[in-house]
Amino acid sequence: AQSVTQPDIHITVSEGASLELRCNYSYGATPYLFWYVQSPGQGLQLLLKYFSGDTLVQGIKGFEAEFKRSQSSFNLRKPSVHWSDAAEYFCAVGAWQAGTALIFGKGTTLSVSS
Amino acid sequence: SQTIHQWPATLVQPVGSPLSLECTVEGTSNPNLYWYRQAAGRGLQLLFYSVGIGQISSEVPQNLSASRPQDRQFILSSKKLLLSDSGFYLCAWRMGDRGTEAFFGQGTRLTVV
Image 1 (tube, rainbow over the protein chains, first blue to last red):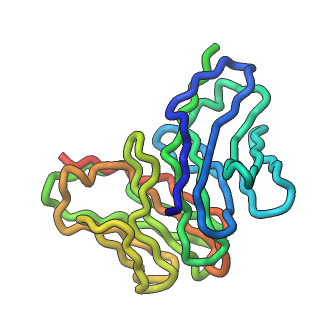
Image 2: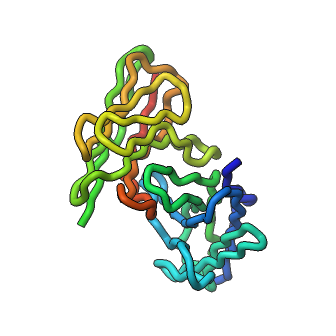
C-alpha cells in the first residue's frame, strides 16, 4: 500500500537550534517526494521537491531534504530555526504519471520557543 | 504564471443544506484537479480528482460529489450537509501532461452547524 509516515506529531525547537523532521514512505513506483508547509488557515506552500539526481535537495526558506532510498526516507532539515518557521509541515509522495494524486503524511506541527 | 482561486474562504452552513465550493485555475490548460479535506491530526484526505472535463474519480465514498464543467473549473458539492462534513477543504492542481508538484488554493473552512 502507498503511504507516508511522519512519526512526530508535534516538535518544539528553540530558536536558532537545528531542525529535522522525519518522513518515511511506502510506494510501489519510483517516488517523487515533496515537503510542504502550511500556516494556520492557509493553503500549502511547496518547500522543496525531489525527482531524481542529487539526493540532497535545497528548498526555499533555508530548508533542505535528503532522499535515502535504502531507508525509504526523505527527512527535512534546517540548520537554524527562526520563529517564523512555526507551522505545520507535510511530506508527500507521488508518481510521474499524470492523473495521479499526491499522498500526504499526517503532518508535523513545529513550535519554536524563544 | 499560473494561479488557483478557491472560494469562499469561510462558510457556515446548517445541517441539511446544500454546498457548492468552487475552484478555478488560470494560466494553464488541461490541469489535473484535486479536492482534499483536512481534519485536525489526520493530514490531507484525497476526496476527488479529475484529469479532464467531466472526468471525476472518487477516492472516498461519502456525502460529497465533484464536477468539472470546464477545463479549469472544479466544483465540490453536496445536496445535504452533515455535521461530519465540517473541515478545511483544499483544491489543488498539477500539470496535466506529467506529474509534478501540486499547487494549492487557500482553502475553505466549512463549519456545519
